[in-house]
Structures are given as C-alpha cells and as structure tokens.
Image (cartoon, rainbow, N blue to C red; front, side, top):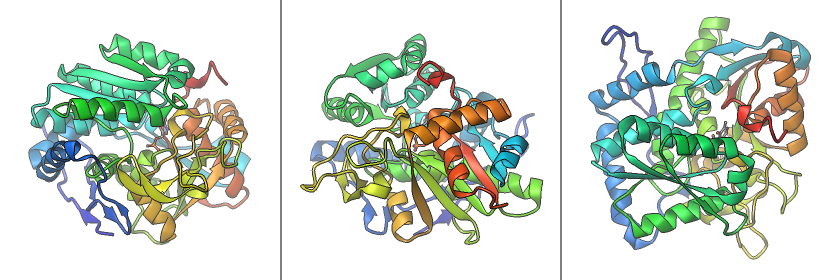
Length: 403
Ligand SMILES: *Cc1c(COP(=O)(O)O)cnc(C)c1O
C-alpha cells in the first residue's frame, strides 16, 4: 500500500491555534481492490473530481481552509476521553475518541467539509448525496447551507421512517429530501437512486458519505477522515505515554474506521479491529460484509460484498441504519486480506446492550452504530487489561425513540 504522508502542519494562523493537521493520502488501488467501475457517462465527471482532489489535497491554502473549518465550525480536535467506569466494568483501559461531539453529531462532518471545499473549487452549483442513518444527509445539508449551494439528499423510505428526526433536520437546513421505496428502501437503494440522478445530471457534485464507490471517493474520504487517527495517536501518547494495544471502530462503509486506523496503520504493535453490523448474525440477516461476504464489483468499486451463491447482491440488515449496507470500502477489504486488521460480527442485541451500558456508566448516549464498537470491546477484550482507543463515531439521540 502506498501511504504517502502529507506533512503540511498548520499552527497559529489568525488568532486561532489550529491543531496540527496531517492526513494520509492513498493511491486508490488497494491490492486487488478499488478502482473505478462505472458507466462511461460518469467517467468524465469522476475524472474531474479526481483532478480537483489531486490538485487541492496538497495545496496549503486548501488545507488551511479545511483545518480552519474543522476548528471553528466543527469543534476539532475532538477529545480523547478516558472512560473510567466502562474501563472498570470491562477490565480494559478504554479511551473514547469523541467524534459524537462534532457539530451535527458524528464524524461525517469531517468528510463533508472537505468535499464541499472541493465542490466549491470546482464551481459546482448542486450537491447530491445519499444517506442511511441520515447523519451524512444532515452533514451534507449543513455544509451546503453554510456555502449556499443547492442540495438534494436521497434516502431509503425505511431509513426515513426509522430516522425521521434527521429528515426534519435536513429539511430545516434547506435540503430537498428524496425518498426511494425500491429494494429494501435502505442505504444501498439510496445510493442507486443518487447514481441514477447523477447519470442524468453529471454536472452535479456527488458528495459520497463513506469510504465506498469508485475512485477517487475511497481515497478522498479516507484522506479527510484520517484527521481522526492523527489526533487520536497524539492524544493517547500525551495521556498515557505510549501507543494503545488496539484501535476499535464500527464498520459500515468504513469511513470512521479508516479514520481512526489511519493514525496507527504503520504502528505494527497496535491491533486494528472493526465491528460489523451483524444483524441477527447470518447471511440474509446481516450487514457483516467483510466477515460473511465475497470479493466482487459493487456500486463502482471492487471490494467485498454480500452475495448469494449465484453472486447476486443480498439485501443487508442491521439495527443501525448507518451500518446497513451490503458493500464495504476497498481499503478495508485489503486490510482484511493482508490481516493488518480484523473484522468481527456484532449482533443487533449486543449493540443494544452496549448502547444502554455506555449511557448508564458514562453519561454518553452513543449512536447505535458506534455501540457496535463498544460491544466489541466488551466481547473481545474482557479482563484483558489492554489499552483500547475506541472511535465513538456519533451520538445516539437519533436512536432513543427506537431503542
Ligand atoms: C454513517 C455512520 C457510521 C457508518 O459509516 P462509516 O462510513 O462506516 O463510518 C457509523 N457511525 C455513525 C455515527 C454514522 O453516522
């Protein structure tokens, strides 16, 4: 894997002290995975995005603008919090990377700020996006409002129902929310609907929300989210004087996980663990793409995918709308095959238990997605005494109703 390090470090510009920003830039091919598999009509549109990203991701002015928004608008750096009661309960030293404290309530805003700046540089007049839990839709509608660009968000009808609070938020922010009832009416179908619109309107900017889809999205999303891991690595060393034993995250499409993993990829002593949305834990009722899927081409990229014996894409299921997707990042596909990272099935029930536990023990209501990562710590690191950094990808207000 080509992991070229961007070294622009920005401090003390204007009167604000910006955090040191360092992001990891990948080349878009991860072993046999990645690449771009799209209809020819979309090729020029994607090439334009790739060119913009290649140009601006190394441009100091761009990085400065990105990092100022992360500080002043989003509230970065997010804290790394030592969860003492959860640690005692688990028998491990648990540090939570508080992405739930970001503006709009999850890690999604890191990527949407980065991409809206790309769209602005490219002179785009309309933003389109897909959303599962609604977190990416909200984060996109937010930055579109901030920059005064028209925004359309595609969402499965089932997700719109289970995440109605986020639908109201998006509308309030001025976005046009388009629901789709095709397929399972969840994230995969929202992506399909967004792609159909994109094929008809290739002049729109497609602001993809996870580390999936054709090049350049996986490397672009990985780049913007790698700020999480960079901060977390510095923070854990400041607080404990050493590297952690493991970094944990939930895995939907893989963006928050690659965000935290990026900080530790080159630290071979740090184990990397991903918690997949297991649903009820068997093919036909799961979203555990890496654990139970097979390599294939899906929605524009080569990666693992949930398929049946005939190779047809299977509907996914997870209690967490944000994890309910039959595809996965090509980079995580690669990290699984080369065994740098391990991926685990966490069931709906295990996630709900962790959701309740973290709320009661620490006064932090986690997103049901993030609860999968907490559940993994409870399952795999009990009485291990190990030091864990867990990415708390989002807050759980949106889930209170359903749980
Ligand atoms: C969207 C979302 C996820 C899943 O997406 P990834 O790309 O895998 O990070 C996880 N947690 C929260 C809070 C989300 O909103």
